[in-house]
Image 1: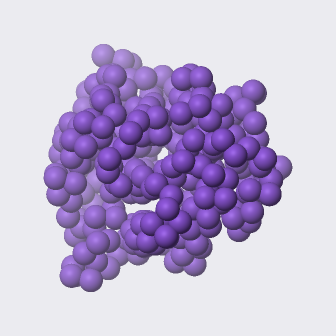
Image 2 (image 1 turned 180 degrees about the horizontal axis):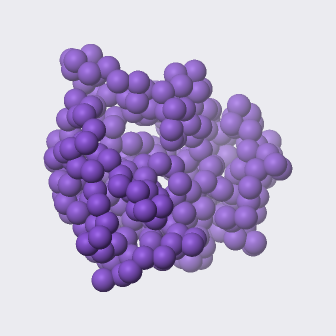
Image 3 (image 1 turned 90 degrees about the vertical axis):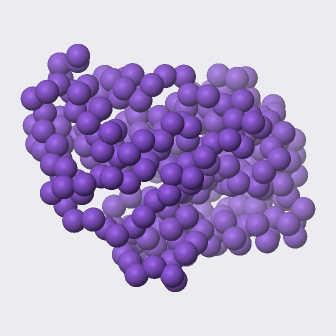
Length: 306
């Protein structure tokens, strides 16, 4: 891989991926929505192309390059908060992902890499479970997009890699996911509240996730779908207690204070065997080390490290 294109380039994962690509001497074309978009997270020397998501299929008219090795489609509206339950927004994301596949083909890209979510695994069986929570709409949209792209990319004769992500943490993640919520509440001196947290989870450090995505672009991938994880899943409660220990024993966690959502995760969903086999990926540090780094990266955080 010598050249890559990244949509959602100024986002949380996109900006980290671009830094990883440039570290490995990959030329990057960064696609952001418009000139009002924040680009301060991007390196100064990156080539920026402005294109709204609803015009993504016309990228070949904005970009002259026809030697792009990998098209990373990371752009997705409504990844956090109440917008995850916005069905109109989530359905549009599926269309934009398919439009991106067409754009990748027109640009003569050799591979398309799109990001999914572990909650797709729940969506796969949504008709057979009793829980119909609104927060599953995001996972259903990702699963639908995955299915559509499998068919479309086969027709286009465009190699597709679906990179299924879990909970990404680290850096300046303010999306409100389990880690950012916990750290922000502890930073404020509050007690974060949770269910019993007895589900299996695999929490992934942003720098590790970016490196895994780079390796999927670089490598000779044999699978159409890979789970991007640490390879060492834990029960969620264990992760949370580890965060408490890093912060110090005066911090409190409200385990069991919230009701269960009824959604069940299977530890087999977090299997990274294919990822390791095809890319050689391994994480660089432990969860505890990464949490300490994350705390240090948070502006204004004053905690006693142990």
